[in-house]
Image 1 (cartoon, one colour):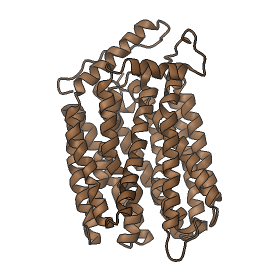
Image 2: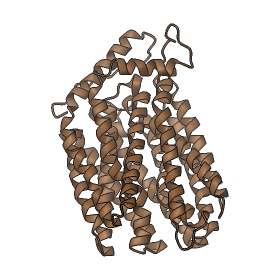
Image 3: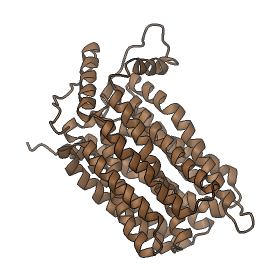
Image 4: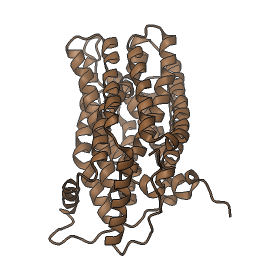
Amino acid sequence: MIKRPAWLTKEVVGWTMFDFANQAFTMVIITALYQQYFIKQVVPMVGESDHHGKRLWEISNISAELVIIAISPLLGALADFSGAKKKFLFITYMGCVLATLGLGLVGPGDVALGMTLFIIGYIFFGAGENFLNAFLPEIAEHRDMGRVSAFSWAIAYTGALLSTAVAYGIIGWLGKGPAGNRTVAVWCGVYFLLGGIPTFILLTERKLKEQLPPGQTIFTVGFHRLAQTFKDIRRFRQLMRFLVIVMIYMAGMQVVIFYAGSIANDVFKFTTSQQGIFFAQVIITGIIGAAITGRVQDRIGTRTTILGLLVIWSLTMFLAGFATRQAVFWVLGNFVGFSMGALGSASRVMAGLFSPQYKAGEFFGFYGMAQKLAVILGLGFQFLLGTMGVAFNWAIAASSVFFIAGFFLMFWIDEREGRIAAIRAAREHIRKHRDYKGELPSDPVAPNG
């Protein structure tokens, strides 16, 4: 019997389908629809300015980020303890689907409803991403993690391409008014619902349940586990260092994610068709970037891969700030897409390599927390520069400082030490819990790791 590649097992395919479906919310709701529709059509303009809408949009995002930061590690700890990451994932999935469908009810003037649904949807979306990522250390051995993550990322970007193409097709058919945008929101909700179903059929979960500690209740066990982690923090110092670095360089990525639509519309005056094609180009190069990374990073090491990508990001963002012609912006879009797909996949792998299975939910909760802090840092940086009167192009170029800082800080990471710590911790946990039914695969750390 021919053994399937590590990235084509039943569990990986099921895991990947959630990534595929998730992109409807990521690319369409966050990057394009909410940013344009909410700011310019839902929120009444004051005179000729949409400044009020932008402020409310930023408040919506930051509010959601703060909630996710507060609850992610705690929810992850509870999911790990109960062995119910799949159930937690299903709850967040349904919550995000329902909130996305609800955005189809938002019309001009429905500011409170729009903000509320977006915040709720984003919270479920962010928590769901954490639980999804937490399956990576279970479904892939260390030597295959890069290829598995890259395969999933490439399929996810394919999902983003499909959802975005249909969304812009709907807007082109029904127009950029409320009818078109509200229909797009419904489309995203249905797409997410149908695309995510295979996940819960195909993805299995290792039952790493634990006994309730003495003197603890189900209401305090999450805090108990977090306290254990901080007590043993030196063992996982490579992960904690990496999370700080992720927060810094992903702050620069947030500038692209949250301002791409504004740059395309306000600076370069893209038409709807041009914007749709531009995002499609970015997504396609993201697929290529993720695929190439999957083949490279397992050979040369994940840290080395991330270092190279941070160099690309630093140059791209600096040049993007001073692009004055559409043609230059189109070219830079390819670099953005390539490095976004590659860096997103490689970063998830690094966190997975440093996370033992029995703490994956908790540790990816911290990873999600770092990403959300990055959003606040990136948006706060842009907001600060704006209030100081810094020109928009200089503000965009200045975001390269996050990637430059991340590049130098990555030399602080010892990938081999982080991998070994995760493997040893997992094996110790298995020896302590004899009711564990599976086996940890033998997986020596590669010399280049």
